Amino acid sequence: MTGILVVGGPAELAAAIGGTSHCPLTTRTAVCAELASASGIDRAVIVALPERGETLGQTSPDAFARLADAWLTVPAGAVKTLAALGQPLRITLVFPASACMPDHRDGARSVVAAGLAMLVEVSSALPGLAVNGVAVADDVPLEEVAAVVRMTLAGDLVALNGATIRLDGGRDAVMAAETRAED
Amino acid sequence: MSAGRVLVTGGTSGIGAAICRRLAADGWHVAVAGRSVERASALAAEVGGVAIVGDNTDPTHDPVADAARALGGLDAAVLNAGVILDADLLSTPDADWDLLLHVNVLAVQSQALAARAHLAATGGSLLFTSSDAGVWGEAPIAAYSVTKRMVLAMARCLAAEWGPQGIRVNALCPGDTAPGMLTTTTGRRAPGTSDGWLPPPLGQIVEADDVAAAAAFLLSGEARRISGVGLLIDAGMRSSSTGFTAAQEASS
Image (cartoon, rainbow over all chains, first blue to last red; front, side, top):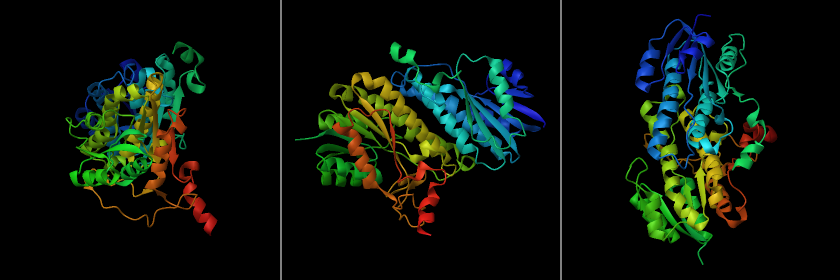
């Protein structure tokens, strides 16, 4: 193994993952230009964790477009650029847990997260790549996220590809009774 | 007596046209929305509806307002317009990614928001066209799969958010359908045949009329307690990871 490139997320998370380089998740043009010249890496982590937002119905089309551009289009561009490097890579995307079970109170982010989960699935078929996802609830400690990300990057987990691991303490394993009561 | 007033976007061909015809046969007053004046006008005349012409990439295009004005309100909206690209992620140009995201997701959200007040006033129903590729992704249509998963998530979120206003929101998830998607990022392709397509477990390729029947059901009073679902119409293809082999094995 050589290096781990971390794109996006706080420096503390990049360090906890063991990242050997870290760049911000800015624009598609900037991120893709940065990654196109990446060398000496065999693993990459893309952290796409937007802030909790509003319902989809409360989110203006312009705001929704900005959210999707920043948190879905840029990660997709990053994965595509990494795939174009033409070398074996393990990639892990980190995104909100609402990718798996949408939270209508946080609907706009849930929809973007759902797209990220599918991005994992369709990218996992690209030659040379193993792509997985870690879906994270907002209150999960950074160290716990890093531990699971490191696991997904392990080179001997050959069969782990196209999977999304949900880190939410089991919250979405069953219908949340408190949610129904609150609503 | 009219069953209601409905807008169908992407209504001039494929699945959308079949939905327009089926809903009209069921007594709906239909606003047929599409990019072609000729196709929209011809189908509107055929079904006794109205034509709404515009392009979802045009920010000034507001088919919901146009349809509500023409029909005197809306009881349902079928947001069916979409675009496809036959390419894996690596072969997807940025401009094509942007176009798919805009037409398949952002325009749908914008039109859903525009429809909310009309549907709340009538206890109406919203129906999106997603895809079986949104349920279980297909790498050769990567960007399309991503956008259609987002459409499914939109249906679920809005079903919960707008349910208290009496609005039902569901999604259709058609499998390989003939005639199906005709609009690609590079233009409009001619309707082809289903020759060479892998048969689903039921042995017969899904037809646009099959999807239209599902749409008619989901918009009907029979489905008054159904909201937040993504209904697969794929003749069983997504029932198994090797569903595409079932019909071949049965016939051999």
